[in-house]
View 1: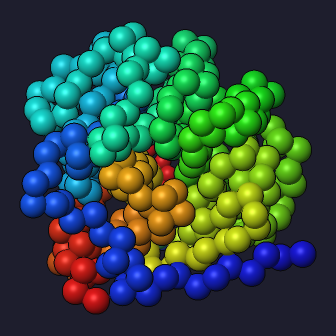
View 2 (view 1 turned 90 degrees about the vertical axis):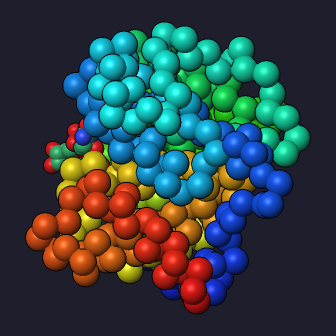
Length: 296
Ligand SMILES: NC(=O)C1=CN([C@@H]2O[C@H](COP(=O)(O)OP(=O)(O)OC[C@H]3O[C@@H](n4cnc5c(N)ncnc54)[C@H](O)[C@@H]3O)[C@@H](O)[C@H]2O)[C@@H](O)CC1
Ligand SMILES: Nc1ncnc2c1ncn2[C@@H]1O[C@H](COP(=O)(O)OP(=O)(O)O)[C@@H](O)[C@H]1O
């Protein structure tokens, strides 16, 4: 049976979720995003996710990346606090302080190296706040170990939320590993992945479906083919991660994040054409997206 997706939220509903900073805000109260991203072949993915997160209001973005990616990211994005990912030990983090929300995004620009599987496993096991898994880390999660880790995280006493943001290829891999048919319609596939991995699943594409394990599916279809460019998924991960880091509930962060991403793509295509819009332009047009939604 095909699940019916509820229509996208109205701009007024989305505007109410925008995380405007309080007058007495500081960088910690505005939310800290830990970003574990950027293997040596893909420093760009880390930079795209990190700068998109900064643009979406996160007060502090701390990036953990491959040693070989450090210089490229530090030189191009000095506001990102950038460290070698050999120093990423989520189990050793002090718990977040009241009023200082956190989230983590892992996987943008990951490749399939076994060392990264360990980084992912430690993060799924120990990161004590909302965790979004994207990019190459989804391929690592797609297996017996990943399914077990996701189940253990959901069963733990903190049970901090897990969000997955697969594109069609990544969703097919996650489905095969979980014994889910990859011939399901997109809304059903999103729901089945949400159940199998105990996560909120944001199944990306020309139409994006946001599903949780309860079977509720939300449709987001305000995007543009101008977004069909390498790296726009890394940008979306950074946007949703920043909203999680600012304390939004996973479903709200996904719905608002997808809408901001789509609107930024549309605004960029209006100004620059659907042909000439680049992934960096999507980040540059996030302010137009915030204004469009806030104006509602
Ligand atoms: N500037 C950068 O450094 C970039 C790095 N990226 C990173 O590159 C790594 C590999 O990601 P890729 O997505 O390129 O490769 P993947 O190997 O994950 O997936 C691509 C494969 O999936 C198939 N596929 C099926 N449906 C698809 C769909 N709807 N969208 C895309 N592919 C689909 C394609 O045919 C292709 O064979 C990830 O870690 C990602 O974060 C990419 O995001 C591109 C930009
Ligand atoms: N034709 C399209 N119409 C609307 N949105 C699209 C279209 N093609 C891709 N997108 C959006 O662009 C993003 C692409 O993400 P992804 O495939 O993960 O890219 P990458 O892995 O290169 O970062 C997704 O958010 C997706 O919904």
